[in-house]
Amino acid sequence: MPDRFDLPAGFRWGAATAAYQIEGAVGEDGRGASIWDTFCARPGAVRDGHTGAVACDHYHRYAEDIGLMKGLGLDGYRFSVAWPRVVPAGAGAVNPAGLAFYDRLVDALLGAGITPLPTLFHWDLPQGLEDAGGWLNRDTAYRFADYAAVVADRLGDRVPAWITLNEPFVHTVFGYALGTHAPGRTMMFEALPAAHHQLLAHGLAATVLHDRGLEVMLSNNLTPVWPASSSAPDLAAASAYDTLHNRLFTDPVLLGRHPDLSALGVPEDIYGAVRPGDLDLIHAPGLDGLGINYYNPTRVAAPTAPGLLPFDLVDIPDAPHTAFGWPVVPDGLRQLLHGLKELYGDALPPLTITENGCSVTEPTTPDQPRIDFMSTHLDTLATAVAEGADVRGYYTWSLLDNFEWAEGYHQRFGLVHVDFATQERTPRASYGWYRKLIAAHRASRAR
Image 1 (cartoon, rainbow, N blue to C red):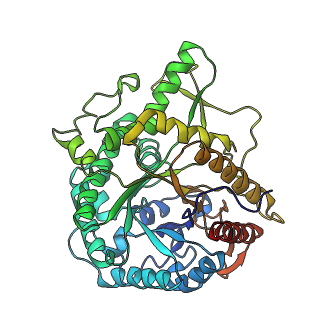
Image 2 (image 1 turned 90 degrees about the vertical axis):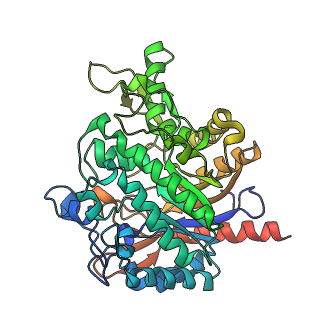
Image 3 (image 1 turned 90 degrees about the horizontal axis):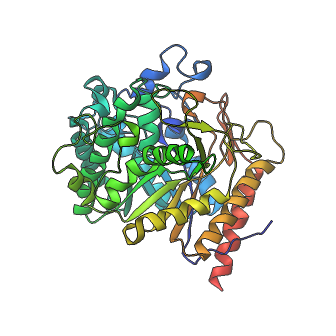
């Protein structure tokens, strides 16, 4: 395998985490309850009853974890700010201790030569807002803008670029449509107002951030959608799924309009959620960059039986799978990047891969599946860049093993192994591989 990839000078190498998955300390220093605290307490909601109450104890061990980042030679670190740690009820009083934690974190990162890339919302909605309707309540978007202003005013002098939302598709579908994630609602397509209100929150927060001279990104889980065959029904099913997974969350931000939702049976006003002027609020602030979380393509067929969904998701033949059961198709990333450029043209801002990684079954020595996953995806990424894709950085998921939502601690994505009983961190072989890759790329571009 190559020791470096042909990516441009200035390409940013990073790693990513999220607050509820690593911080722990859920009852400390004034933090309020989040929907994930509530969901984890629901019997049977999370595998084996695991919770994020301690997670990786990053709240107390962040200095050690930044040492691991510095050892990798990272340019950037993507993390999320816990809304309930900063504004415990979601609105109203601000928690000084919560802001102070992120102050310390940012200063420590900068002291290690690592650029912070914060995400303002990575699924841990304050429970107080959920009690008032959560993302189904339009007011939550405005409370998010208030929260964004609080955090930006505290950290914006040192943090130039921000991500508003992480994966609004996944949060809407798993949290509000299917109920497999917090808050555990099962509303199917009637959950889509939660999608619109998240996008509205993005637009409002983007205006807040731009008004302070800060750059704004949004990250979504994007997937190339493959029809199972060239038949008209399979092509129609693939188009409907692409609309739901990708275009519903990207067209409003980049083009200022919704895609045609008729194939989903969803009214144009998304069950009354869309009001006059909303699309201008979502689109007008503009994006300085689009974050792409890529894990796999999605293969789609026409439904085999009448039902609510106009598509069936089917497996990809002959593809290997991660421990999570996700197909491994590196070239899907190249196809996705080129497809975005074809669809959005000049409206497409610079791109960053804000998540890419795989879960590997333990124990695995010498961590070869993870190394192979990263190597093949970076090789494909370099090909896409050579073919014209404007990609500025790559953040692997994840720095640490962590709380993997409804799977608890059973899926291990980390470059660093975490013993959750002792909190001991042990870098894996993939950590060493990534360190050497970053160093080799940096040295080659310094010549």
